[in-house]
Length: 123
Image (cartoon, rainbow, N blue to C red):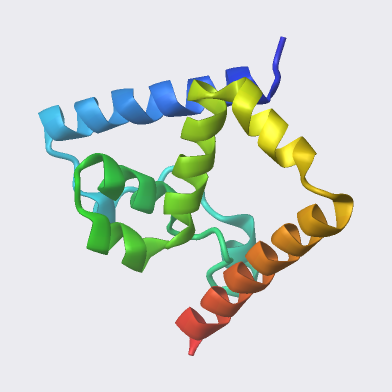
């Protein structure tokens, strides 16, 4: 059964395995292109998520500044995945203990930060 906990664990495990493989083989994050971005292909403008794969790969190699330059939200993605994978009950309790208004504000702030970062990178 696929749920948040299992999906997070698969993501974290996959990230660890890719990190080990990339260190062993010597993969350079700048040269990685797995799945072409449909938004970028159509508009020739990078989407807000562009660079996330390369950023996660850079984090696994310990190159945090490079990861930040690719996509700063990779840190948030990995932190959330780790918290749900390692502490699923606590993560769920913390999120559910927030009011609906607080949850909405958190989501709005993250969305605004993501879009602001994207616009800033485009300029």
